[in-house]
Amino acid sequence: MAWQPGRPTTQPAGSDTAAAAVTELYEQTAVSLIRLAYVILSDRQAAEDVVQDAFCSLYRRWDRLADTETLAQYVRTSVINGCRSVLRRRSVRNRKVIYELPSASAEAAVLGHEERGDVIRAVDRLPDRQREALVLRFYLDLSDVEISRLMNIRPATVRSTIHRALEAVGAMLREES
Amino acid sequence: MTQQLDDRLRAAFQEKAAQIPAVAPPLALPARSRRAMRPDRTPGLGGPLTSGQRKLVAGLAAAIAIAVVAVLTVVASAPSAPPPPPAVPAANPPPYYVAVTRTAAVVRATRTGTVIASIRDPHPDAEFAGVTGAADDRTFVLLATGISSSAADRFYLLRIDPAARLAANRTRLTPLGVRLPRGSTGLLGMALSPDGRSLAIVAFYGPVTANRLVIYDLATGASRSWANRGCQDHCVIGQGVPANDLNTISWTADGRQLGYVELTGAARHPQFRLLSVNAPGDNALADSRPVTLRAAPGVLQGMAPRDTFWPSSLITPDGRSIIVDAQTPVGGSDQGSAPTRPAQLLRYSARTGALQAVVGIPPATAGLGLAQVMWSSLDGSTILAIGFRDGNSAGLLHDGRYTPIPWSADLLTAAW
Image (cartoon, rainbow over all chains, first blue to last red):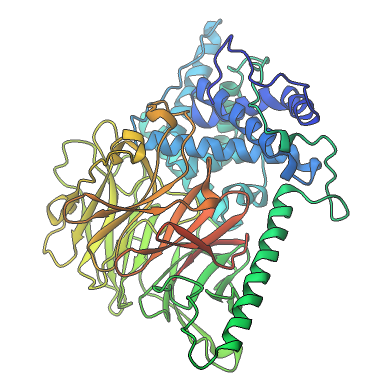
């Protein structure tokens, strides 16, 4: 469900226990989750939509979720799965690298911005699986075991995927320089 | 160098994330059914049953009642009673499969889920990451991926003998002499030929170099490879695959054709192609033919199959049909962020591209889940699919009906 500015909510928050709890969790975690989705997708609107979808899914399935301790983890997994789904759809459409350099306010900072932009563009050219593994490792600082659970692959596969992704990014950066 | 790159990645990701403002848009929750709005949710075994648990209990009670009636009926009229309807579709999958779990590879019985044998990782420096099987249900190839940076991916031949009395005799693992092609940085797919003599893979060479289809002769280690040569319009062999499955290519039962997907054109539409493996060349474009799947009214909400995304596809063993797991954005939107409809497993004619049947929708794939087609009967009338959502599940689809098979959430991938 795409969020549109000004659109009235179909279910006012706080009308039931689930809505209140989900809304509270959203307020606590939404920004960090949107940032995570944005790092993976390079598309702010898509990132916001994925996070909205994850919380809507949580709300719909509230009665079936037994362990409230792991709700944040559940939503994060939903966000990552949602990103994966968007990437798959994008892979059969016109995959664009949407990332643009942020505007630099000081000349001294421009070189750093450009350098980091090169890194991001190299990451955007990786296969989905490698890009996802890099984000989970170097943005969320997750362990091999945590990444393996999220990606449904084994820990050694996580390590080899990250190793290959680093090799590919390094090669692309050397090529560009 | 590696540490420097690690730091550069962290800095780049942090800077990119910081572009998102610290205030999130408002949350717009959907309406919930009255039944779902019970405020006194009490989790745990001692609490009231959830709706899912109630359904399970009701389902079990119904199943027990039906079973009792069926047994009484059979006992009462044993000599002349017709045979009871089969519990699973007539075209059953092979009785055994090999699965990769988080800690090992296991041989399991399809019908019961019983673990027949467990195979430990072949080397401290490698662990199993993928599996593919031949048509005899006894021959498999396992992929072991290297853990350290110096350890290469290796393939292992696995022979199983489920009837062996001693557990130690039920499996025999042998390293294969074939390696990933030089310069390749990973696999996008692998499939053992029905006779178990050839292994086909899709080799990935990085974002710049074209992917290749490679077929190894397992007896000699010799290989042939195909790349797209002279492609004018972005044709990429092997599409973005689910994180845990390598069954993106498939053989016909006669071993003459290999089905694969490539992405074509600026819009990167998926296209199914059939490679004639006996053709003499090395150009995948010349040695294969495209199968253009045609849109059918009312299916995929008016979108052409090429406008959907395909988590999974295969050629049926008889070579006559193509099974596609198609997912479509709601309303046919072209926006990458639009939610999708549940996967639909569709069967198309391999000759004409016309839709033959909607095989079904695995229930576990509703919403953002997906289905991976793992096995097909000869003509594609029965499909075995794995669903990924809220814990994995697997089942048979036949005539629009879904029959789950015993499965475990720790099974990452499997081959029949």
